[in-house]
Image (cartoon, rainbow, N blue to C red; front, side, top):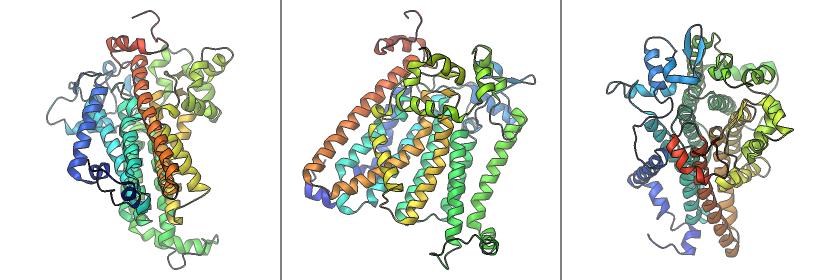
Length: 513
């Protein structure tokens, strides 16, 4: 690798060598993704590199596809196990249809009800997610003033993106829960990429951008509703904002009038603008699809899952009581959910009086292992805090760029709210926080890089040392949490769990394995 002098690094003269060149050039980037794919498969397969291997309920999506091809949204009870929702003599699942529809690609070549495709699907989703994150990082880096493009900081960010965070510790298995979570995260990353590119390179969203945002939002709501709702809200907000921008061009500095006459004058051209109608139509079509699926499953187009029919309620003593008293989502749980995802403390207290009774009454389950993202992805957390501060309280971006990013983050906050108020706390749900956190962190990275360019050399050296230290910390703890996740997850083979249990401070087994 070429050496970059400090002067060249600060001036930007050396930014097209090293890691920047790898991210910028098609074939080198493809080679990097190939290496990432191999490593992800190593982690996901417990070191065996077996791509087509059984996972818990891994044939359910293929089975659901075959039922869909016959006009039903049911699933065979024996392939869905305790995740079945029996209703009117048939079995259903609450999972979205996207993971099943993915099997259409393999349908001409194999029997999708028998072949094990879960690992391949999860692997593909994770690599796409990482690739999109890296593309966003490159866009943000290239948008910096030349003197602020520090190759060493870019390299640290790349390492943190590839080797730390939820995309690592969710790789305990490819069981049925993880596939929609990973694909929804990939869709949200694509959503953020469109937003970042439009905000930082053009300072505006175009009609084609809005079509893609609506498409990704529609796919997401048919994959994982928590992310889908967030993307749909974000799309609606930016479509409305773009419409007001486009149809206020004659007097851009005048505030929108609240009078009926002025509003009607604005609405009339908006109603004829294809740039606005296209994303609205796309969202409407996907809403109809999910409404039909929900109606066929639960008898209500607005119900994504009717937990009254859940099989697990038969052996989870407080499941129906929690649902009846507090509902699937409840704002009273907000602070507990925030505490769990920030520190893991509620899991530590769930068996300790008097906290145990309080938590047992409000939650169907609180999943191990407990940990804090300040250890698994500290760079993301700290940069996200900087990004939110700079975006709302001390902005350093043009007004239109700020508005696009703010509206998108407001949309993403819907997923955060849903996860924090849900009746189950789980490690895998942390990935639903990624769209909000990663977008805010990219904004923070931009602000820190600009601030560093104007700082003294000694301050920059301390920043580099801190960034490298936090990156290494995140990588180590992300992999350790992955090990703990494998130990505690029922989706991991028992022999793998038993082999790794010595690394867990607390054993999940009632008796020694």
